[in-house]
Length: 241
Image (cartoon, helix red, strand yellow):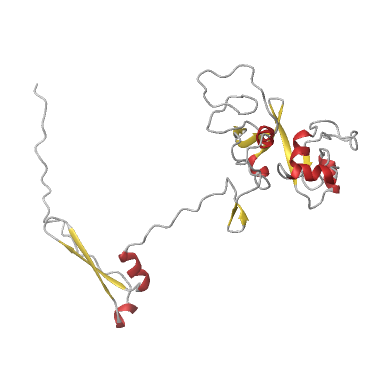
């Protein structure tokens, strides 16, 4: 467990559970459930701020905030949709691994910078693809310790709720036409279609009132006389002998 003095020190650079979560040891055998199958510690409780947990330890952390730590290339990562509910991860490079967006917990120094890469992590110098400042949560934490007042792990609030970075945006409704609004207000319309000689149609509508509203069956279409149409085909063309 983290002492109250450590919690006050950690609160200056983020939530009290952030530094213990970054420094914890993961994917080790649980000392309480070592004899059970799949007892590796890949969970962390944000409310207890203690050591890493295994799946059998969750019985003692009911109704607590627990995140799962995963591993990629021998480095600890956490999914964005899990951590961003409790932490502002802006300025940290995100990656797509196994169709899921993740962030790394600790810094990953790079011995040789990538060719043609102009953006690097401000702490460990790792190449960054996008316009981010840090490659991991630990590097952002070290950036805050240097005295950068623009950095913060506090979530931005919107309408009294934490802003979700992956929250789907509801598309704006398009403006409805006057004809649609008129149809909604008075659904009883009489559509008149006049066909001209050139085959073009002119459609107009008028409201129905009285007994006409009770008869909504469509009118009988005009009978087309096929005998008057020309059935003579053109003379077939044959290739010369």
